[in-house]
Picture (tube, rainbow, N blue to C red):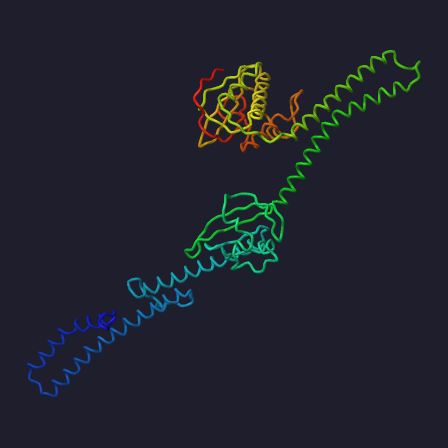
Length: 455
């Protein structure tokens, strides 16, 4: 940039140009007047000196102010917020330079507070990352580790420092691809898993990075396993005790009666023995049915997948219930890839429960309907029974409020739905009417051929 193109040079030239007319007029008057040569040269020199000195003073003033502003901005760029522009006491807002200094000082205060907040947030984040019992690693676009917390160091112990290492060399190549979240069974130096893998993308300094989180599921699984065993032992103990207690009581009573001499025995002893044995047989049969139901629930075979038409499935099961009216509402044609026998058992349990509820209420009907939304089938069994008073124990094995119930119908139905990648839920109806609604969600394979359904 030439000197004439500089901002301060333009300011000097403008100052000289502004004073040039007055200087010309003064020199002209000086030459026309009757003055000696010495006076003329003296006044002319003073005028030129004043003209040039004023421009130089203006140049120095402008240059010094701009250099000060430049130094303050450079300090802000270097994140040095200790420098401040001087603001004269009592200076008003109408002074341009004072306004600039105030704005720069305010910007410095704001940036200092933001940097302090960023430092505190970064320190908190690093503390949390170091303390959580979850392995957290960040990889750049080339798959190189750029961040690893203490848990990640423990998980990959024995592999040396993690920063700067390649994901493939650490056995984490599979973590950067594939569907998430998912479960990994990979064995790492610091543990054997299983691990829950979660992954997300973020950008740092404009460059893409990948955040990988590995959670050890062993503790959670052990806790769930312990709770499951506790629930199972509690239910088994309750049911077995309900059967063994009367058997023991009656057997002890009959033993005492038979231990008496013949002349002291009651006249209706044979009748008591027959009745007692009948109760023992009945309770033993109930206990046997309970254990058979448990074995059935525990040995549910894996599904054998085949094509199942939803309309035919619903109509086939609805026709089996004869105690109450079961209406199958027309729905969209859909095809499932599922085990037809297991789906029949699932829907039979739901329709039977709904029919029991209607019979308990004394009147009403059962309706089966379904819809397909975004490749998902939602089939609902709706009844007009009394509804659900308590939903806490719906899916607890062997829990039942029915005198002749086994307590595995809903548990088995949910197990079948989950084995097919679906879900089962049961809740009171949401349309304000009495009754409850069981909903099964399953993945739809394709649209089924159009067919007529009669219920």
